[in-house]
Amino acid sequence: MTDPSADVDEESGRAALGRALRYLRERSGKSLSELAGETRYDKSYLYRLEVGQRLSKLAVMEDLDRHYESGGLLVQLWKVARREVFKDRYKEFMRLENQARIMWMYQLAVPGLLQTEEYAREVLSAAQTTEANSDLVEEQVAARMSRQEILHRNPAPQIRVILDEVALRRRTADPKAWTDQLTHLLDVARLSSVVMQVLPFSAGVHGLMGSHLWLMWEPNGSPVAYVEGNGFGELIDDADKITDYRLSYDRIRDLALSPSDSLAFVQGVSKEHQS
Image 1 (cartoon, rainbow, N blue to C red):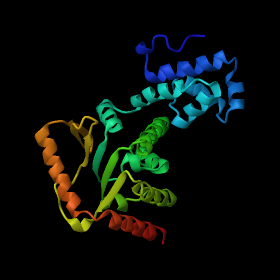
Image 2: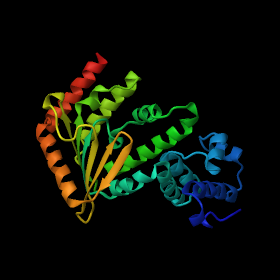
Image 3: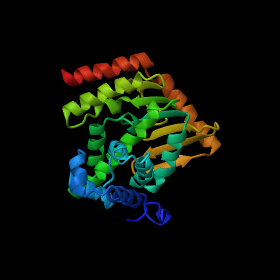
Image 4: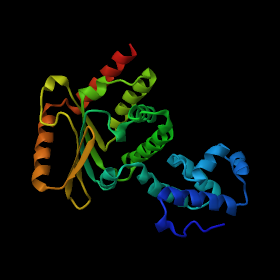
């Protein structure tokens, strides 16, 4: 057996996690078949985790941490490994999102923090061109779901989301997945740390059409903007540009429905969909 802490700096996070999984299993004196028999996980799935071919959901690592009584080691290694799922340009964004005390968003689609697993799977699958990428999709779904932990922290970041009406009109292929997504939006919008508003088509043209916007404030009060469009993403820390984006955000917030009217709007969309 090899100590999983050895040479961690020289290998990927996923490889380090796989090696730790194998080390813990071998230390317990169990084969993959025996471990599969003691857990709810398939032997081939456990093998692929150990050799770094798959990245699990967070819940799997929590289960295995409890099984091995490893004190959260696997969860910590998983958090490092999951960052590798994302492209380099998103890594700094994720760090900022994870640390932000205040976050304002304008979104043309349901944002990742508010997505259900099935909605996320359909969105991420649509971006793939071959069935060979199905494993990658599952890893991306797991990573996206894990980001939603920040909604339930204590204290949770204060989040304001302005959803363009187009986000509520582009349904998933699976009717139930879309119903569940709309219900989830309503549930999240009722959290004390979240404010959701809808920008209806009747608001007309505005300065943020064609791109998603995040405005985030770090614990020290420093602001940063992130703008994302078709095939690009840009972090902005220039004070003048951030001020311009904040003014644009303020303008569309003035055009958006109130939080209570926005909830009623989403409820109406859900009823239309189910009728």
